[in-house]
Image (tube, rainbow, N blue to C red; front, side):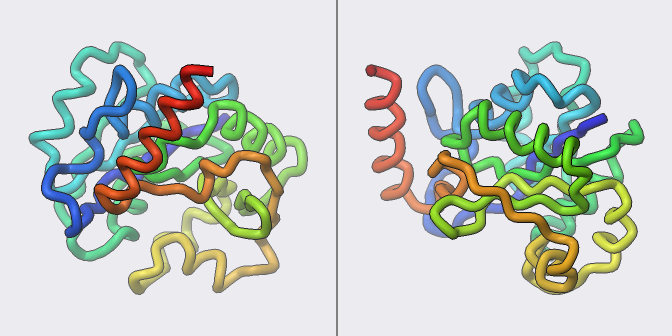
Amino acid sequence: MISAVVLAAGESLRMKAPKQILPWGDKTVLETVVTRLLKCQYIDDEIIVVLGGNFEKISPIFSKYEDHRLKIVKNNDYKKGMLTSVWSGLNSLTKSSEYILFTLGDMPLIKIESFNELINFAINSKTTILAPIYHGKRGHPLIVHKSQIPDIFQLSGPGGLRTLLSKHPERVTLHEVSDEGIIIDIDTIEDYNIYLKKQQGDDSK
């Protein structure tokens, strides 16, 4: 019923190493995102991880994973914008999921409970497009009903899936969560150092 697409193709020009493979606890940043999705009770179809320019460096970290739902995809057009990664993910889905969850590979602070809460809300409310908010600020993941796929392939511009929300605000449901992680991504080495310490502090409690 639910598939997930992890958009990990974006590269930060402000970091020397691929941010997706920076250490995060006993895993990497990207692995943390993916393993949390693997533990979600509602994701029963596929988990597509879309990689871009650092495919050869990043893809080997998933060689030890045996979950049949997990699929690694290379987007050769990643330099043309985030939408190409969205399209690559959708083109790689082999099952007819009712909903698709889109999230970013540099957001390792989103809790499993938040993924489950949002998916459960989307299913039960029969939402067309669901976006979480934290203290009024919209974040990730984005959950989209399969009926929106044709419109996603018609999108253009640099805005990624934000363009879908701005073009069709009447289809969007906002759901408040208590998880600050939905608005925190790792874009700079400063971000990484700050939030890694926060994560380590949380884990030690």
